[in-house]
Amino acid sequence: MLFFLFFHFCLLFVNSQDIPPYESYWFTQRLDHFNPQDTRVYEERYLVYDGDWDGTGPIFFYAGNEGPITSFWNNTGFMFDIAPEFEALVIFAEHRYYGESLPFGEDSWTRENLRYLTIENAIADYASFLTTIKQEYNATNSPVVVFGGSYGGVLAALCRTHYPAIFDMALAASAPIPQTLNTINGYVFFKLVTQDYYEVNPKCPDIVRQGYAQVFSLFNEGKYDEITDTFSLCTPLETQSDLTLLELWSRNAFLTMAMVDYPYAADFEGNMPAWPVNVSCDILLDNINNPMLALAEASGMYYNASADYMLTCFNMSEEYVECADQTGCGLGDDAISWNYQMCTEIVYAMDTNNITDMFPPRLWNLNNLTEYCNATFQVTPEYEWMQIWFPLAIGNASSRIIFSNGLLDPWHGGGYLTSPGYEMPAVIIREGAHHLDLRSSNPADPESVIVARKEEVNYIQMWLDELYRTKYIRKQNPNRNQQ
Image 1 (tube, rainbow, N blue to C red):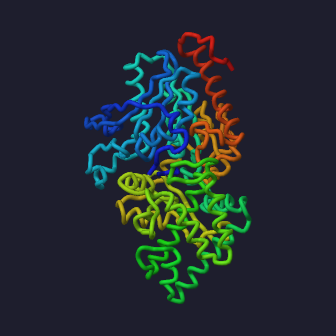
Image 2 (cartoon, rainbow, N blue to C red):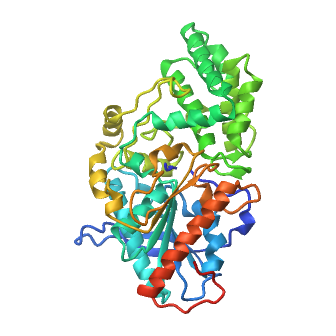
Image 3 (cartoon, rainbow, N blue to C red):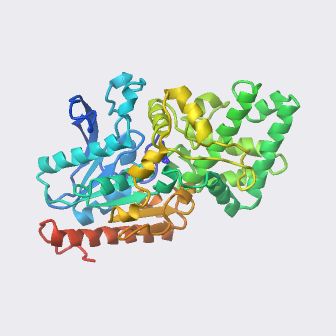
């Protein structure tokens, strides 16, 4: 996501000076890797930084996910932080149908053209690209470490699993693979969002529940203007559809703040302050005697932070668009692509019940998902195919994959919190939000992410040393710390 994420990424606000400049290139990519008779191609964008590469070191490859690749470049400082130590070549590749890598240009989102948007084709893109790029850089003896966060983490694990001869190891950060395979209880995600707020102050979830209850009560009494005024809506709330949109618009604010609950101000999913869950919880507590106002003010904080200027009113239909992904698809053309993926191969059951979570009851299972997808794209979700192709028992199918998860991230409930197999360590970050470990180091980083990054570097170094001894030839660097 998403995952995930999945989904309208922004530029890094803190430590952006540590992200080196990139050069953009284009790679001629097959449209359909699984039909030899189809010779059509498209241009895939990729970014390169070789300022630390010594010509023989490893390749650090980021498996781009659901957004412009430049945004992932600016939000994955960890790769650049450690590139000098490994003298690595850093490459980021853009996912087909996102950013500027559009196979059919402005016609990429027609029903006929979208059928080439599959995870299978996306990772085949990366495999084909790496095979060629290693030759172009005279780097056939360079091991490849594939990185990814959220959906990109899922892709990183898939690259290693399906193309082990090309991708030597992977760091899959905040990758909710069991969730992606639809094997997780649908109530888990929003339960964990609620838990984030409860741990800041046990009163905060109850204020949110009471705020929604007050909204429903006023709506049933026909007091639409009071709701409209309290939430500073640009257009009057009048219908049941308006009420549903208000619920989802508000819920989206809370879940996103939980995901990006970083210990410093960051421009990722909006200009969030440090610890946005704490800040929004304080807003709830400041308005504890008026729960609806508390709900409105806390929700509004997120959307104001996401805007380029202070909003005088909120236009819900422009700020949040309902889609197949109940954690949000974002806005614009990239959102169409993610919505399609959520209607075909990626299936999340995402439910709320107002008991284990603080949100109004809402079921989103395979039945209503299928109805939505049939109506929107004339497709049917195929999560069973993913369970076979991924596969479910990844521990028996791959190796050398690091799975990291932050316990502040509501997606951790859909990820691997214990090792699923041999050479598949699970790295847990107690104070970590969504793939915090992939971001640049920061003075405000909690100790748990500092330790996690060291652990990840140790695994990468250990596996590289093994590969240098058995598979690759490389000059020895006396300055590198051997593990």
